[in-house]
Amino acid sequence: MGHKLLEVKDLMVDYRTDLETIHAVNGVGFGLDQGETLGLVGETGAGKTTTALAIMRLLPERTGRIVQGDILLNGASVIEGTEKALQRLRGETMAMIFQTPMTSLNPIVSIGNQIAESILLHNTQGRSEGEIQQRVDEVLNMVGIPPARKKEFPHQFSGGMRQRVVIAIALACEPDLLIADEPTTALDVTIQAQVLLKIRDLRDRLGTALIMITHDLGIVAQTCDNVAVMYAGELVETGTARDIFTSATHHPYTRGLFDSIPRLNQKVRRLRPIPGLMPDPTDLPIGCFFSPRCPQARPVCREERPPVFSSGSQRIKCHLFGDQEGFAQAGP
Image (cartoon, rainbow, N blue to C red; front, top):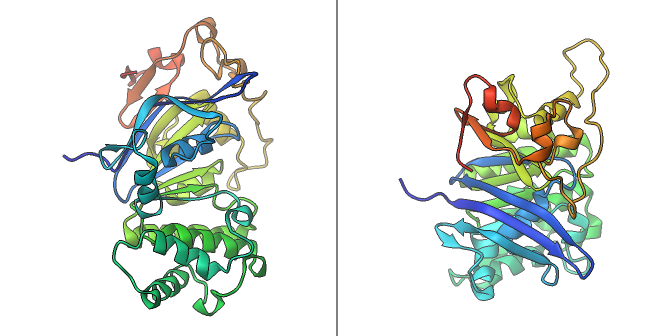
């Protein structure tokens, strides 16, 4: 078998200032094949966006540091790549849909020119101006925007339409890997459904691998093949979407996420939110990062880092699974 399209190996990312060091990502590792979709799930502050920015090599220059690990795209290290090589990769091989379309688009440049710029930067096929404009029209049609509107500016579009423009820019060069960072945030439910349907359709049509970053488990159920649950900068549970949504056995944090979701098919019950807050990333707990909030925490949880236990495709980082039937300790 050949290598995976994307391999993230033991990734650690810090944000460093003169006053403190924020441990944003702490030993994250996963792989992604062509055409596969991974849902990266967790609360705000879990490190999801930082992981995506590290993959794209878009961390803030002054403060963001990849302190450990490697990121391989098609077998080649992204971390060791030159800025010139990265410019070729971004847009052509990997692209990102950012969280806020209003700030992702240039307000004084027409949407057609913004899409054309992406195509022009990666014009390896030597397209003429007419061919570039034809490609702009194709991409706009692909995301459901009439090409006649390509001379209009971002403020003339609704939030959902702007998000579609951002998707069009990301897909203009048909990248192998697409990272969607909360692509439906601040959109109403109807527009959310349209944007998700469009992303799924384009993924299936183009064979693009997709990382869907979200805190909404409903979105994950609709779009993802595999799921990685992230807490305080580390993956606490991974598995296929089928395992995550049908298994009765979960990391206490994953169970807490499920308990926080309203269920329409059950009698009215009070939601059970996870108590407490995410730990301070400048001062993480000595043992399990989730132990201060965990209702099942034991003394060992507060004193030692938990190992990973696996059963089939499910991998759970939790001391409680040392004596769980069907689970065996996996690698680090």
